[in-house]
Length: 410
Image 1: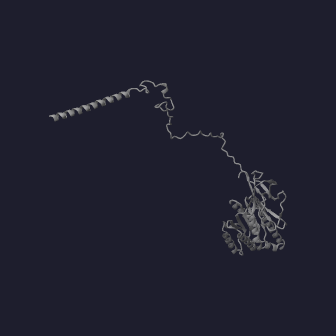
Image 2: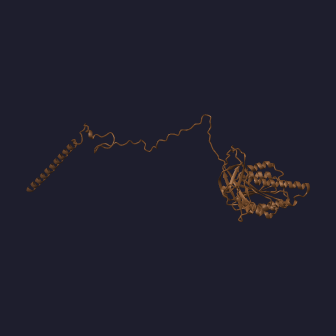
Image 3: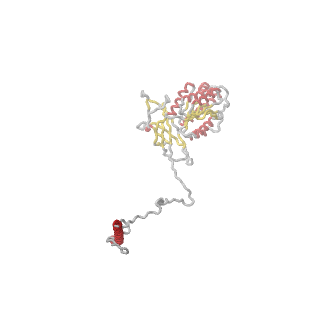
C-alpha cells in the first residue's frame, strides 16, 4: 500500500512540472510576437512618411543604411552593334556628263651610250655623270639617271643565206659561229635566215648548242645551190623588228648579210622610218663577201662598175641601220678578223653607260626627236682622254641618233 502511494506522488509531481514548462513556453512566444509588431523608434509606422533627412533621393547612392539604390538604365539589347556612321555624300555628275579620270604621264627617255677607243674599239670605263651632256633637238637636257651596266643580252642573229655565191654564205656562217662562241649562259639568242623569204632556224634559247647545231646544218649545204638568189633584206629586217617589239627590255639584232635587196615589198625609205621608230632595239651589222669584193673591185667593164656600185650601196645601208640605232658596222675581209669584231660587239652590248632624262619637250605628238651626246670635262670643255703614256686617245661615242615620241592615242 505504501509502495503504490509513493509511485502516485512521484507521477503527480512529474505531470505538474511538464504543465509548468508548457505554460512558460506559450508566454515567451506571445511576448516576442508583440514586440516584433511594435514600431521601433528608428522605423516609422505604417502610413507615415519618414523624416525629410531620411527620404531617398530620386537618383544616386543610398542616403542611409537601408535606403534604395538608383542604377543606370541598361539598353534593351546590349549585344546590338553601334549605329553606323553617316553615309558619305556622293558627287553626281550633271545630267548627260559621263564619268572621267585624269592620268598624267611624264615622258622618260633612256639612252645607252658606248664610249669606245677608236684605235682598239674597247670600252672606256670610269666616266662620271658630269662627263655627259645630252641634247634633244639642240636643247640640253638634264640627266637624272646614270649607271654603268653589264648584263645578259637578248639577241637575234638575222643571216642572209641565198644563192648569191658560196663565199657570201661561208662568211655568214663563220660570223655567226664566232658570235655564238662569245655568248654567256644567261644570254637569250635566236637565229633566223632569209633569202626571198624568212626561215626560223632556232627560237630564243639560252642553250647556244641549239644555235651551233643550226649553223652546222646550214653548213652541210653551203656548197650546194641555194633555193633563191633574190634577197629581201628590208622585209626580213621589218619582220625581225616586229617580232622583237613583243619582247620586253633592250634587244639586239646582229645582221649578217651582203646588204643587197632585190625583192622586198618595202623600199629603203620605209624601212628607215621603221628602224627610226623602233624602241629598245640596237642593230649591229657585219657585211659579207669582203674578200670577193676586194678581189673583183674595178674589174669587169660596165657590168663590174654597176656591181661595185650595188655593193657599195649595200654596205652603206648596213652601216645606216647600225648608226641609227647606236650599233656598229663591220666589213671584215678575212675570217681572222671575226673574233675581234664579235668581241667588240659583245663588249659594246654588255658594257655601256645608261642615261635617263625627262625631255623638256613633253608633247606626245609622234614627232622624231634628234639626240646628240657629248663628253665634257669638269670645266665643261670637250673631254680629252690619254693613255698611260699621256698620249691623246681618240674615241667614238656610240648612241642612237634619236627616237620617235609617242602619240597621245597610244
